[in-house]
Amino acid sequence: MRSNAATRVLRAGLAAAALLVGLALPSGASSAELKIFGSRVTRMIMTELGPQFERASGYTPVVVADVAAVMKRRIESGEPFDLAVLVDFQTDELIKAGRLVAETRTDVMKAGIGVAVKRGAPKPDIGTVEDFKRTLLDAKSITYLKEGASTIYLDRLFVRLGIAEALQAKTVKPDTETLPPELQSYIRFTAAVSAHSPHQQATRDLIKLMTSPAAMPVLKAKGMEPG
Image 1 (cartoon, rainbow, N blue to C red):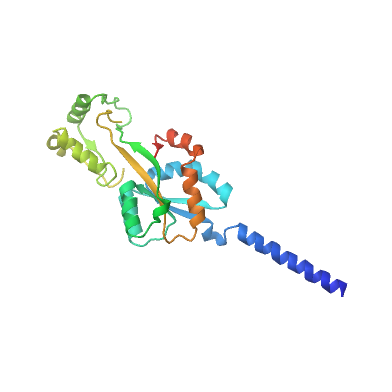
Image 2 (cartoon, one colour; image 1 turned 90 degrees about the vertical axis):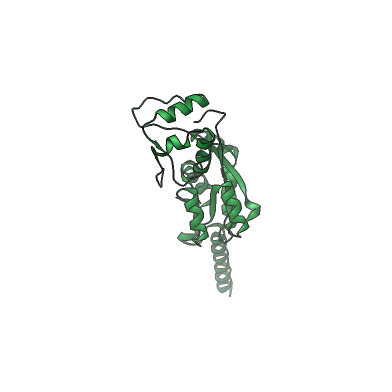
């Protein structure tokens, strides 16, 4: 009798321990991943913050990145994901459509618009509005995204500066990929949890990390500012 009782107690203890382990860890390989839909800046940030989050939570952030407008369309098409980090107005539109959880809406970071030149070319003089205009007018060609967070602003800016027509013939807008203070515009990236994510709490915790003091040096190192 004592032997049977001891065996039953041992089995019960092992079952309880197995249950606790099952509750503590994500179940299955797929549930151990958090899929993030965002722009390329999101991937840059998560390259640094992802390993830290994985060590603390057991979940691996997996970033699927493209131009924010493209990622928004993928969400609208019904593709599954856990977290979206898009331009603020895009996030708001998806919240209104019921695809993101409104109460999780969080401004994460913002980025100004910059200028880059071909490797080896002289650094452009864009310190003032007039210098910026002259640089654009003198350039042999100009490239900026056909569809991106900054595109609408730049199109309107060139009209406001009175140089849109002069730039049109030499402007190339590819499908894939700083200004003077008076002309600068900041693009704000805002995160929210998918309404259909099975990992609601883990995804909320990831947003907290992205906006925590620990994330600030990462944002600054990548040319971003806190949201």
